[in-house]
Length: 124
Figure 1: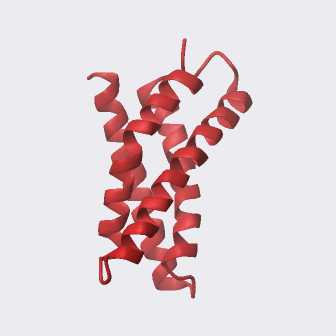
Figure 2: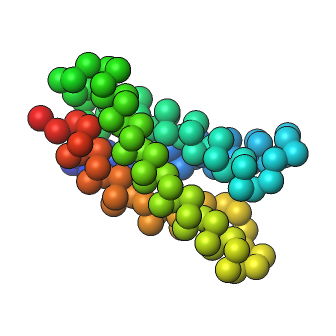
């Protein structure tokens, strides 16, 4: 299986983790869709780092702490893009289902994530 396909599979796992955490937080807490999404993004970022490290790219030669910091930096940057698209959709399209906005925002950030992770975190 190609690296891009493995990355897409891990992205799907991250999407499920993000969506499940978002749904849980919306159902079980007073957080609204904007604050709950901040927490769910952080959770998904941790899940995808472990999966990308294991399945997609393999561990980098930098060591886990440096790799994690670099992954987090790229992840925060792409998560900001993801979050801005998510918020923009919810604010400009009244009645858009939260999970649809999540899916569209996640797709928008996927290419940026691959480029950042493959070149800045797991490059050989």
